Length: 319
Image 1 (cartoon, one colour):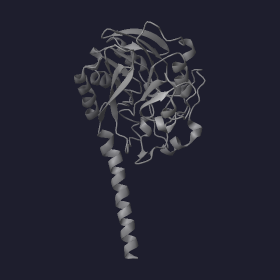
Image 2 (cartoon, rainbow, N blue to C red; image 1 turned 90 degrees about the horizontal axis):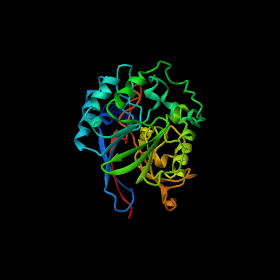
Image 3 (tube, rainbow, N blue to C red; image 1 turned 45 degrees about the horizontal axis):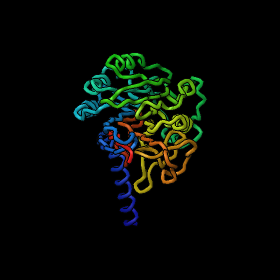
Image 4 (cartoon, rainbow, N blue to C red; image 1 turned 90 degrees about the vertical axis):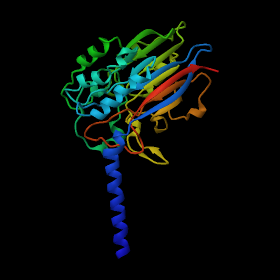
């Protein structure tokens, strides 16, 4: 019996250690990923695009704020923010302070659910129930499971646009970045059914080097629409990389209808791809980058085998 008790004690100690690591260590172990994306026409100069997402910032999170502020030293050609910046009614000044240096660079953004509504405590097991994943109708309804108190969304939008960043909320825009003409198309948050891609759907511009689609949540209907129109790169967040990954297996959930094989990082997408692996991508398939993000709901801040991240994408000419 003594060996059984020793085994139980060891297992309990390992579980407690893993829980402490997932709660206090990994959520603060920020990573800068660097990825090459061959999506530009031959002969085009490379562009460095910084993708930031899912800060879920609370003003007291000084370590996160300082780390994000340090990203300005990368001097990216373009910054794309895929939403969920806020986690507190008072967070807008802290977000703008953290982004201050980055706001000097050309940038564009879309909004996520936690740019509209404050997070609240909820059962984390809910994420393992497929019934909560929204298929989306684009009819402007919000998720009733979210706290109904509104966040200062317009203050955040004004802070970004006041420094020159483009608001891609159900909008198309053109932007010359370091001499490279880009077309950008974005939607409001599909997880809240706020998206209206039909209002901005159009064939990719012939005179742009690249059309980039931007969305907070990578629902398949949005990815299909953007890539069907000719977007060569789609950028998204929302998934938190699954937040808790099993080493050797990966993520269990994506919190949307994207397959877990594309929960974070760079992959390929084409209309109707579904759960087909990137290895089956047809010629001309778009690139999809999903960020695991920099934060999470402050009531469930856990991360395991899924470090918080920002990504520096180097867009290069196709071979």
